[in-house]
Picture 1 (cartoon, rainbow, N blue to C red):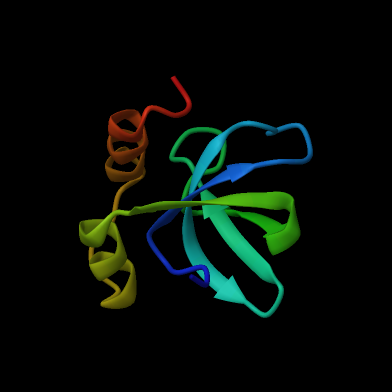
Picture 2: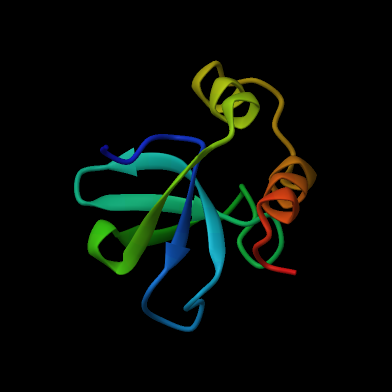
Length: 88
């Protein structure tokens, strides 16, 4: 399975190690990640694919809003990650 928008990933490297993020954009070998707190949608973290661990969790509501340029809030991402169990 390749990375997809709306998917949850876990950081393996850096200051944010072990943190859960949602993929908000893809660009070549890079992912743009947001967690709604330290990394809001307004300034997502740019991270190489090799520095994150994939999960099988994809939030369809978030994915749909991002792909359709819908109204997505940082609070939506925080709530989804809380349900996932990351970034308490």
